Image 1 (cartoon, rainbow, N blue to C red):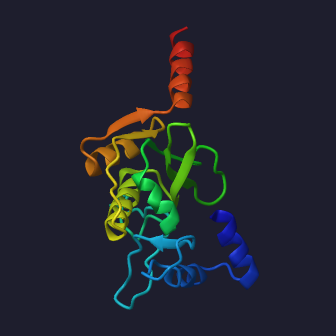
Image 2: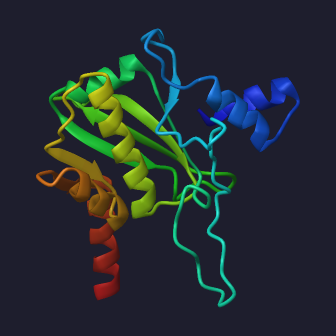
Image 3: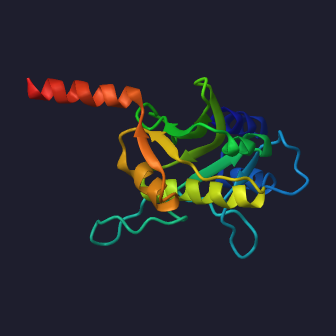
Length: 200
């Protein structure tokens, strides 16, 4: 998704929020959209029907404390297709992970998908996000729930696997009260190594 946006921007020789808003506005979900065509979802619109895209940073007030998270401060862009969304009905373990630890330039990319019984990951949705807070995962999960209802898909995860960050787990429990949060094997072993090194 990041590469697509970069190519789109380079093609138009523009690098502006206005260009991105134009792309988002003309690629929202509609009933006649082809199953394999991407679209943006859970996009807030202003009174003129224009997409509201946050600036990607929390502003500080006069006491130098961060203000409350909102759609004006956080940048969240969600992308999927009807074909990808059909995977929410698969039997398996849902998973979410992102490039937060390795992204050094621009915003990280989160991938939400489902892992089937053969260990195959089926992507469902992508999120470019400026932060990794409960607010951001609330935006992802509420968007997925609303879209699944719109498409008449049954979406009620029993298991969601993620990293050791508490934000995604907290948000998952809020939206899916009966879900069991799992930690991926990589992060389990990473935490074991850290605890072992710290204990010696």
